Amino acid sequence: MTLNDIKKAALALMFTNYSDDLADVDVDTLSSEEYTQYLVNMNASINRCLGRIESAGVLPLKTQEITTATTGSVSGNFARYDLSLLANLFKSVSRIAKESASGEYIPSVKYHLEGTTVVLPPLETGEKYIIIYRPKAPRVSIGSPSYAVVNVPENIAEIIPYYIKADLYEEDEPDLALQARNIFESLLAQLVVDESSVDQGVVNVWGGGNQ
Image (cartoon, rainbow, N blue to C red; front, side, top):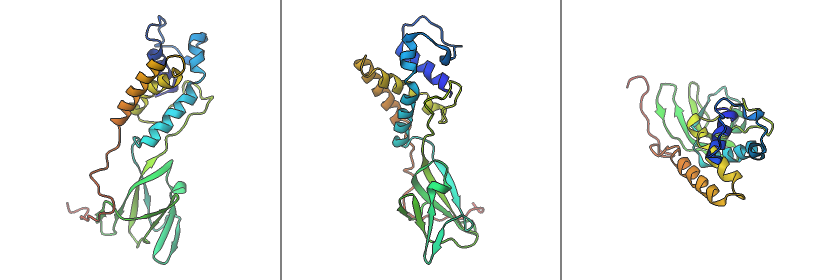
């Protein structure tokens, strides 16, 4: 969704009785103080919301493959890989899988973390690790135009207007702000990524290609 879409949805929640039809309006062209007093603070509010979304772990998990060709530090029985350099928008590890040269797949292996550096046994030729990780939410800049895209899935972007209303109404309309915050948190809780079907550190191997 674009900033324009999100901001218009937020205005619709904040001004339920306004008579203006904003369906085809670019919010960057609005000049009425009724709107601009809130619009000027919306990008910062959206970034605070993205931080909340990020911390809740609701963004779709991403993957990063590690092979013997991946840049890292291999010494003796340990290999270290800095995931902040290898994985796009890396925030935290969810689990690490391993695939053998013969196609066997282990959905979860044990690992250690040193900050953003993961420590694993060295790979043999043909093997690879698959890092399944939670990403950061890309932020928007304070001056981003209305056509800029908020780069999160649409079902997540759709709940951002409730956060904006809660955030920007906190001083002027505390009751309405609290109501919007409760709606936002309830919707956010429904989006939590469920990885409970995979036990962390449990080695469970099956053949790939013969199943």
